[in-house]
Length: 375
Image 1: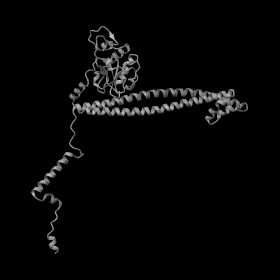
Image 2: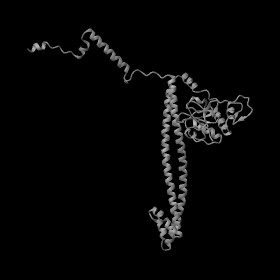
Image 3: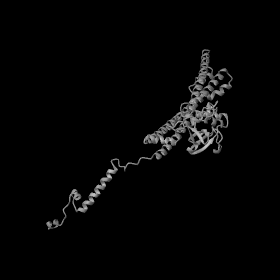
Image 4: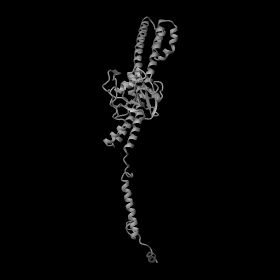
């Protein structure tokens, strides 16, 4: 009975036999499936990704690089603002420290005087109660009792009250210095953060540009206005100077159209800066960033502009685009992160970004936001 049942069972196949055995059609199907799996594995590779992403086109690279430069410009303006605040805090801290040292010197002199007074009274047989207050270990007791002591009218009371006032003054200066030091530390931390952001953005842009050939990079630079960094040094027919620029030149013509002499000098300065390299955070004279250039140009005209695009836009009345005149500040992007100096004929002089020197460019090259005439 057992043998009969066993004879009706199918022999069990080894897994490898199952894959290689069977009918021709089954074997063909299995082979196709195996090849398909192998192909998928080959396409996937060891890193688990699909086939390599296509190389971006030069236009795509340019768009992304332009975006990175604009993001770096935003961080640069934040850096400039933080640096300006840090410089101010550092100067204030130095002044407070000097003031604290001066007042501490006067405090020590008053203490010495009181000590001599106490010693004299001790030699004469006792110490005045008002002077005894000086010897207390609790300085707050000085301050609490100063007004009462001064009302006694005695020389000792007046001296102690004066010492108490000086002590309070020194402590007030010290507290202000401590607050300023904390503010400076916070600002320097922000500076570091913005610096890291800028370096990261510019590094990413350079990495993208490195994928292009030299010819593609040159073509991209030409589309961005490269080659316009050469200053117009005049036609040679001029017979004088205007703001240091030969008359008869485009620079002198732009300066002559400026609304006032200060704007004319700013325009002349900007023309003189053509070709200088862009360096973020730089204010000249060998390199500039965008707001550093406009600040330096207007400084030459006797006007002190604030450091950043965010503050320069409030340095004078707003000007409608149709009313632009040479010397006006033109701002770009919704975040007001870039600025140039208008020179007429729809053009400006600006410091674009790393690798692009100070140059002339149409104001239509970037999204126009607003314009200001410094006053």
